[in-house]
Length: 603
Image (cartoon, rainbow, N blue to C red; front, top):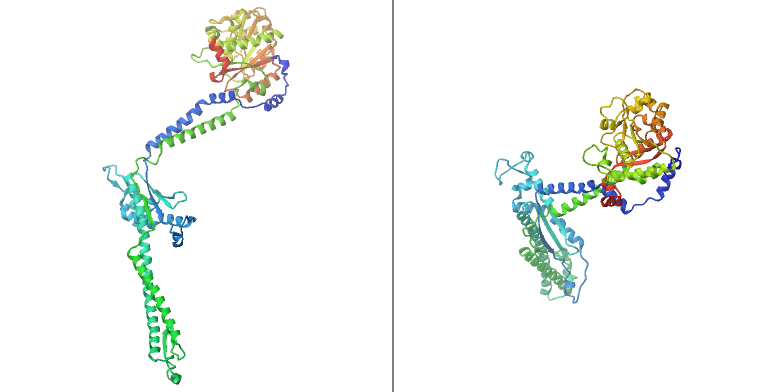
């Protein structure tokens, strides 16, 4: 029921919050309502992000990436090559990573820079176009003018390394060499030059290694040749004696001091050597010498004909499309990011929003019934007789529902003096009061509207702007009260204007004279509607509210805070006012119930 006895003045509102907390859930209607409420934010954020991304794509210089691919020889052992059948062996990740490190090294970068003369390329020096020159004229920046040759070289290498990208293709021995530049031809040229420089570095490294090895082998061969000759000479001397010993035992003392070089050391010529020992030593040196000689020949051949362990399997060609920025991907990511940002902003605003938006909030958090939701009216600001001008509009239909609810309450207890108030000014209480009075008068009831808002007499300014006497005069002189009442002009009700301001208007409006005036007016009118001043910041409305049979509080949808409205209702209860319920005013069209809108369109 809407009777105040259902919600007594000291009612504990926490019980309603507890009951609603257990039944809260998010349904399809809540999601649709959330999207409609924050539609401009959810749509505007991705549009702004896409527009910013589009500007970024337009102003950013396009970057082209050319790719070359090389293959490293895994160098299978000779034993595995000779075996028949399928051979499985693990990939040498360290070898591939090492070659990738060589490709990224400054040595390769320096070779490419010198080959292509990139030291003079403006893109690698960070130079700008001359504002007075042609398209091909460049001028150094201020930072370039004071740079040394070493600093310029380091900048060129840094720029080269920033544009180079070396990656392994899966688990294979293939390596991708990619280079990014503003010029597609230059990108392909540098990528191919990098692959060629790497292969040339391999060949030069192998040639240098073979040269150093050949020099060492040549020195070693000279030593082995001397040792072989000494050993052979000793064999020949032994055979020349036709004896098993080089010297007879009788000559041992005479020649004991003679020595010979055998085996790389000083060998004393003794008379106890046998022919077999000397021949074995000579044969051993001969085999060692032949082995080193064969290695020396192979080293010379490798030095003369070095072969790289890498080959180019895909040379770089001129790219046809830019690699950065990617227009479609950038716009798509910007749109997705905009949607996420918009939804995030909407969620934050929704969580921080404590304004009145749902009738469920009024029931659960305030302990009152929502008498109705009035849509926001567009067009001219004067809507005080909207119910008479457009009786079949959505606003008039919603206000008729409020009138019907008040009529149901009137069956249980007499409501002849109805007050319309709000928590703050400009929430539409005067519009509700005048249009509700119009509906009562159109139904055949004698209706009087009292403009009790002494500080902002909106109804008086619109319906009786020339009035010089009004409510205060009627309270002071009740015998002449009917002479101060004027017709509302365009509307079909009478108006007691707000005139005769005094300093203590709150004492006058809450006095016994005001109560007696209302009793006198009931003899001439079936219902009296009072435009009560807002509860904040004046107290006139609190003083007048206890004299009324019922008070309807108007709250502006999306503007009136729940905390402020709760404090206003608490003040009215403390003033012993009989609160009938709350009317939400200026509700957005998208937040109204779908069935209500379809019914309004049908009628």
